[in-house]
Amino acid sequence: MKTRTIVLMMVLCILTLAVSFAAENPNMGTWKLNEAKSKFSPGATKNTTVVYEAAGDNVKVTTDGTSGDGKTVHTEWTGKFDGKDYPVTGSADTDSREYTQVNANTTTFANKKDGKVTLSGKIVVAADGKSRTVTVSSTDASGKKATSTAVYDKQ
Image (cartoon, rainbow, N blue to C red; front, side, top):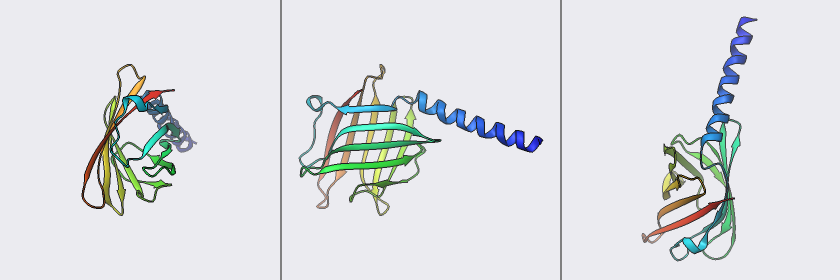
């Protein structure tokens, strides 16, 4: 009986921490691209909507937008902001992504294909939590480097 109570208490503590992280993480919620404030390199994918939501003790990130050639893009990633790779679905260019929480309002990330970084960036949520800026650096197949800055408004 004591063992069962201890295990139950541990599970409750873990769930509380997960919910607490989700509630405190300023990325959580729905973000809409503010294209007027954004600057994209030619051919860049534009994620018009990004949603961060709790998924158990993980975070689920769903992106919807258009690729550089105008095709619809929809990706999903579920994992932790712990710097480890977790699978991405919906992208031919990315099979995993890692997020690292730098501080309360800053997160870094890297998209990878076959273990090689194809795109990396930094997300900074404004102190008031109403907007966020995503700066992305990438290198295309020919070795050309590109940088884009996307500004999102909280919905």
